[in-house]
Length: 546
Image (tube, rainbow, N blue to C red; front, side, top):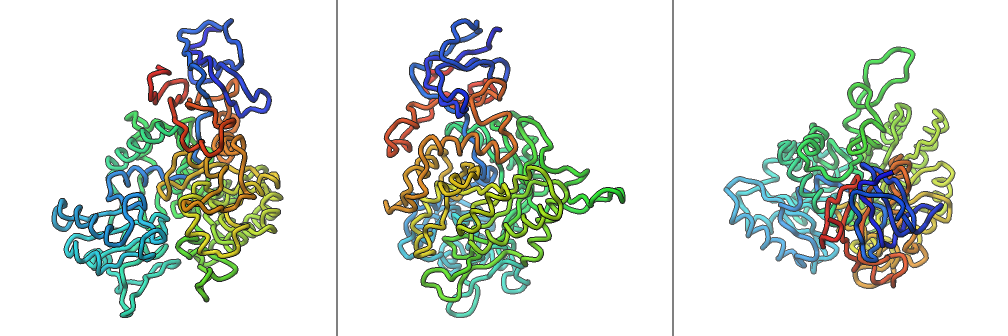
């Protein structure tokens, strides 16, 4: 055998139980051909000496919003690292308005009311001061809220048209809309901004791809194409295809079509009713670069926004225990129809009441229409009672929590749930129950670098330094497996990716240190030196892997 390239003199964390460590890996075409400590007997067109660097399988973000992240790179940055007060938000919007043509929308992204000095959302009146004519929309970091100014409200006819089911138009002290749109009410304003031109989507995907490669990401799972929370992109899949043809989609993507894109299809009477994309397309269709995964359904809202469906009221907020984004009967019906049609189902559920309801729906669907190895998912699975942990394990359901939430959103979550922390963003207790736990970010909700997520899975500390759930901490090896093999499993990909194993895709990441053996506090300081996708070096910080 002659390899195309051999990467050697490395610490290789294979995430393969049959050979946990090695020092060299050989690649033929886009596949791993050999792994071991001595590959000197294999000839190669090229040999790369990594001088003791660490190789891990390519990171796989099991829940992200790639197109939205790419778009956000060109919007007004309002993240807590950039702005600390409502006044700073208003000033940042004002500067963009001054540089924007009259009547053109101005979009800001990433503000978090929990981290602003005032601990509240901006209002339309405050935005009106700097933008009386340009419509303005501010995206909350959670994605579950937006704030619009009066010009935008006028275009959206807020107060004139009916509020969509599962949404709220917030009112100010004077009883009139104050600009805050919750959950599905965002459709009123966001529908005016979508669909975007396919060319813009391709640019966004290219920018996101480049960024992902610099963070060691070789695969990701797009949690909702076609439209979520007020965004509707009818040709979004075509944009992914166009980006791939143009060489701008440089990481592998699993697409989760929004349940709103599925519909009944004419069929033979002997067949079950297809509930699918046109021609009956469902989970699994595609190739190594771009394919369909589960369908995405929304059950409830967020913890920091206090809209997640909870059994008990939010701390200090009597009477508010959140809400579902649709009637539970309809939610269960959609899950049942998607399951019957052969879909893997991924349902966003954060509150404990929503998680329990989704587990009920999965259990009923699997009882009435048995299918082998469904791998239905609960996206976030934020508040999970012990009884639901047992049920999730029994059903083979995959929870998809986000470790990075602990750091960036943890302080706000603790304030919202009070003493119910043990149920919040479980990790270790899922593993102990025999449940597969993938790694993900929900980017652009938080910073999406997998190394930051791994750091937080291990260290379990909020941004202010408060211990979050120490008993849920993972080891570095467990966290690494979450972002590699377990994420692959969550997308039915464990036979082709997720570990450095002969026959799998040659997707791996080169790090400047061994994150499994270092002080856990140093994980976030780890540098991605290179990213290899299908045997090709797609990112090379130092030129070492060239």
